[in-house]
Image 1 (cartoon, rainbow, N blue to C red):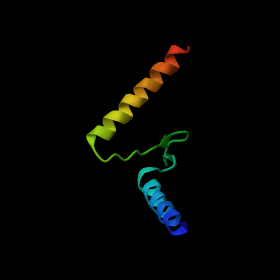
Image 2 (cartoon, rainbow, N blue to C red):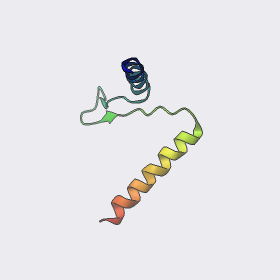
Image 3 (cartoon, rainbow, N blue to C red):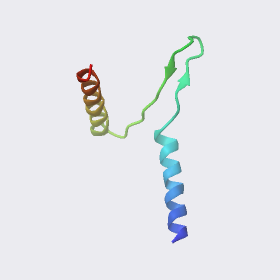
Length: 63
């Protein structure tokens, strides 16, 4: 049982290393950061865009 949990944690670490990264500052410009989002296919990209648009609409609706 502990081996399965360790394997799952290792897989999770690999996935987070591949897909998630922290904001990195731009060298020449102060106050500007770069965020990279890796996607595997167009379907995943479309769902990210859709969710971001929903988030923007909720944020604008509350103003």
